[in-house]
Length: 382
Ligand SMILES: Cc1cc2nc3c(=O)[nH]c(=O)nc-3n(C[C@H](O)[C@H](O)[C@H](O)COP(=O)(O)OP(=O)(O)OC[C@H]3O[C@@H](n4cnc5c(N)ncnc54)[C@H](O)[C@@H]3O)c2cc1C
Image (cartoon, rainbow, N blue to C red; front, side):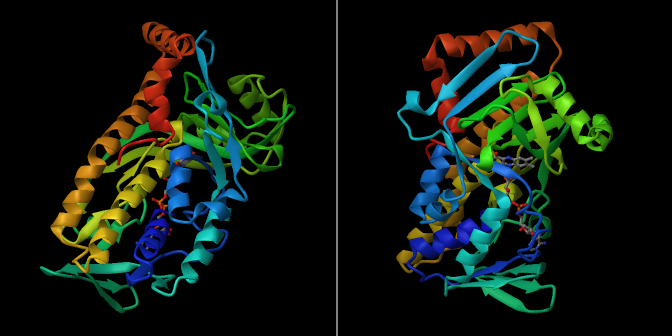
């Protein structure tokens, strides 16, 4: 999704003057690793970015708006809530289904004459000279360009090929996702509930269902996945509580190991990195694609400015501009998401007291919510 969005954004910002090649390993069918059963929350600020590139209206037709967010700490007194109307906004974000997004991006890419898609294919080697980058595909075909962008996900083979290393931190949690039906309507409310084992999130989605992300320790994964639907719903009910009444049905379950991966550098000679290839986060605050989209928007802006002035779009001025503009936001978002995982998956009584006082203080003094809300809603300077 990050790579497709970048190609479409550059195409739009340059009025189709940039020649762009996309190399994609997987065909756009049901088993695509990027466009799978996940639902993701697109923050308000991200919807505005997608609007700027003319990409939001089609995605919006299948999206479910988030009007309220409720945050609580299971077994403790702390809770807080956010509401779009209090912020004077039409919504705090929207939930989209990645299978819908896959179809949309596939059609959008094939409708742009300046974009060529090489799929299924992959990069087998990268060679760089002073003023260009040459890429050999797995079938021997060669592409030459001023700039190559790696958007090939958390374990980026392209970054490995140019020697860009990454930090890694295992959160010791696995996310189980599934669609859940509930007795009470969600009414556009998203829930984040912290438990000592990991967070449980329910996002509002189409047909009255909620999309579950339930983070559990790896040693609980096998038994949790093997539970009957009834037993699974009963365990989930006790972790999540009764804010949506009885949990009545659950769809197919899928799981994802949760590891923070962050590229040490997001640029190299004639090479830039975006999306999960730059940083893959814990899904705790639904920030992964939102942060990746801000990478994409900034890089698209740097590239288009150069191309629209008939200048080299892959030289160090472009790359340094991109790196500098992304530094603060990347560091801050990684720090917030990792801090939430550590702070809320901790059994220490003192820490529980501090975080619960924090949640309640945000309810009592709404001004305290503002910095966190701005960051998580993607209202961030780029
Ligand atoms: C459980 C869960 C919940 C999440 N919830 C949210 C949320 O609510 N909000 C949010 O913003 N984010 C969320 N995220 C994160 C979000 O899903 C990702 O950030 C986003 O999908 C990543 O997109 P990407 O395009 O950067 O990477 P990917 O989706 O990994 O795409 C990489 C692409 O590169 C291709 N590829 C890989 N290797 C090669 C190769 N060698 N050659 C050619 N092509 C290759 C792949 O086929 C794929 O198409 C969540 C993640 C998880 C796991």
